[in-house]
Image (cartoon, rainbow, N blue to C red; front, side, top):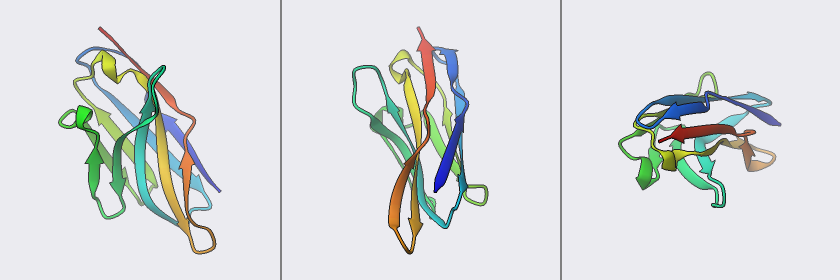
Length: 120
């Protein structure tokens, strides 16, 4: 079992910055990828950014150039640096980890979510 603890959400004015952190703990065998999703009221959850163990990064188009995902796989931690925030970035942000074990293959785990609110 893998547990995820997120931190760093909050309220910020448009144009401001926030950094989200997510630490994985528990019976960790191998993490394939770590990422961030978000869900705004009335909308579907969407992928924001993902980073693989090899360092490959992908971002949703709306955050490219503003958000940066990074990771410290030695600490099983992923970060999301968010700059130039705008009200459209307001959402609950969820950490996601793809965890591999020989017995179960790849399983996906989710954090509890952290609220990011950007005021005009």
